[in-house]
Amino acid sequence: MTDTVTLGACKTQILASMTTPCMIAQTLDMEVRPENELLLNETMHTIALQRQVKQNFAAGRFENDSGPYRYADIGRLMFVPAKTPLRIKFEGEQVSIARCMFPVSTFADLFAHEKGLIKSKTMSILNIRSSSIRGLVIRIASEIENQLDDAEEIVTYLGHILVIELKRYFDSRYAADGVSRGGLSRAAWRKAIQRIEADALPPTLDELAQLTGLSKRHLTRAFRQSTGQTVQEKINEARFNRAINELSNNSITIDQLALKSGFCSASTFSNAFKKWTGKTPGRYRNSH
Image (tube, rainbow, N blue to C red; front, side):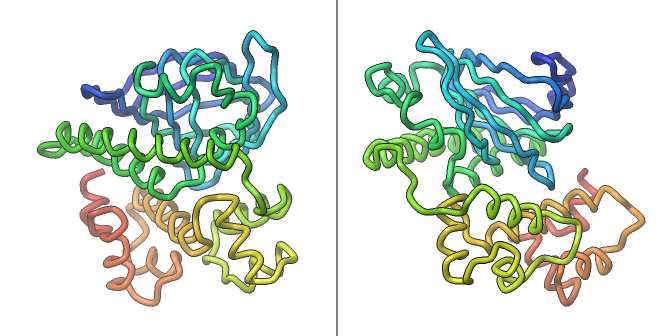
């Protein structure tokens, strides 16, 4: 299915959607205007993942009866509680989103007002630092887009696992009082992300350390604290996202794409790509 709707100041195209007993899962593309702010007021608890090759840097702040809170950087993966207005300022124009939306009752105990999560833990939910949660959202998006046999059963199962992982994540944030210690500075984080997602051969750890002005050991530890991923996990995610995007260009061969993605051979690239997506590059290209 492909539906076009208007969301605030954004034109939104819903690419795929599936409703299960526990959630609604969707993939969508958004066109945003950096000069405009987007005010989200979701009726359901929503976790959203940016899927495009290059991250659209953004900042957001929650607004409710107590007044607006300060703007905080939004990561690739964020959670928006139901009925809690979120004002977003994007820097780029194109955003590709995978999102899962849950009934209010799913997380009612976690987002009761007395918990105060919105007031004190904004960073914890606007930048979800969990590779397991990220992986589940990616898998759900793939299932609803491909619509293979038993997709609904698989998405239902993954949705229940996602709820459990989210509750564990939020519980850990409460235990830590919402504080994420360490991590990269805003400037170092942006430099590292922009280089990793650049249309070029993947960077080495030495290059990233030099770029951010940090030791390799410090960078490795701080990067994971800031993103929930290791440096290599982020590099792999970027190179495969780029490869998926390139596969729509039929003029590029698998051999050329392998070299462009930093692999020494097409067979090595194909094996790694299949492990990441569940399909070989050729099969992925034919099915999309």
